[in-house]
Amino acid sequence: MLGRIVSRIREEEPDAVGVFAFGSYARGRAEAWSDLDLRAVTLAAPRVPYRTWFDGDLHVSVGAMSMDEVRRLRGEPAPWSFGFAVESPGVWLWQTASAVAAVADPPSHTHPPGEPELEDFVEACGKAMRTADTVTLRLAARLAGELAPGLMRDLGTPRRVADRVEAVEAALALEVVPQGWRDDLPVLLGLVAATDAEVGASVERVARGTLALLRERAPDVDPQPELARYLADGTLERQLGLQG
Image (cartoon, rainbow, N blue to C red; front, side, top):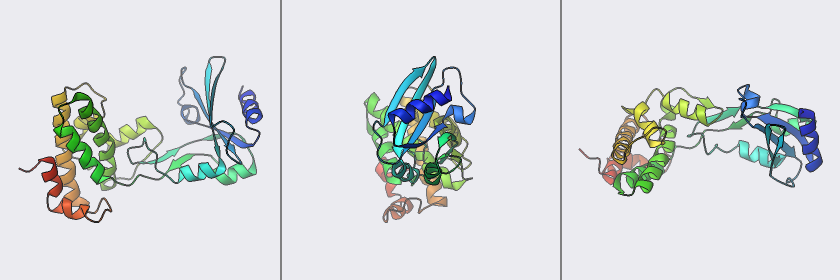
C-alpha cells in the first residue's frame, strides 16, 4: 500500500525527491480513524501544495513543499505550539540523497521556540477583561492562554513537543506558573465548560500572576526596549486595572 501511495505522489509531483510520513503514524500512535500524514519534498515549487484521497478506508493527506520551503519553515516557530520548540519524528518512505541533505535523516519536523510576546498577552488580557461581549471575551481569553505558556516557558525545564496535545500537556506541566494555572489555563483555552464570569476571573488571575512572576524572575522576557520598564514600574498592571 505504501509503495502504491508513493508511486502516485511521484507521478503527480514528478519533481519530488523524497516522501516521508509524520504525525500519528510516524509516532506509532495511529488509531483506526487516523489519517496518514505525508510530506513530499520537491526540487522546485510543487504543482499542488496539498492533496488528499482515500486508499480503501485510509485517509491519505499529502502536503508538498520545495526543499527551500522546508528549510525556511524549519527555522520558524510553529504557530500552534504555545511557544514551545517542536520536534516531531518522521519516517522516510522514499528518499534521494538530495532530499536527505535538505531535510535530514530521520526527517523530523523541527521548529525553534517562539519569542515571548508580552505586549500581545497584555493586550489580549485587557480585551478579555473589559468586554461585555461573549465572543470577544472568549476569543481574547484563548489568545491570552496561547501566549501565556511562552512567557512562563523559560522559567523552568526546557520542553519540546510533537503535536497540539503535547503542547497543552507541556503548558499545564510548567513548573513555575501563577497560582491556579492548572485550573485557569484550560478555561482560557476553552477546553472546559465555564461561564463568562469564570472566564473573566481566570484571565485576571493568569494576568496578575504572570506579570508578578515575570517582574520577579524574568523582567527582560520580551526584548522590546520599553517593556521591561513598564513591567518593573507597574504600568502593565495599571493598563489592566490590576492595582491593589
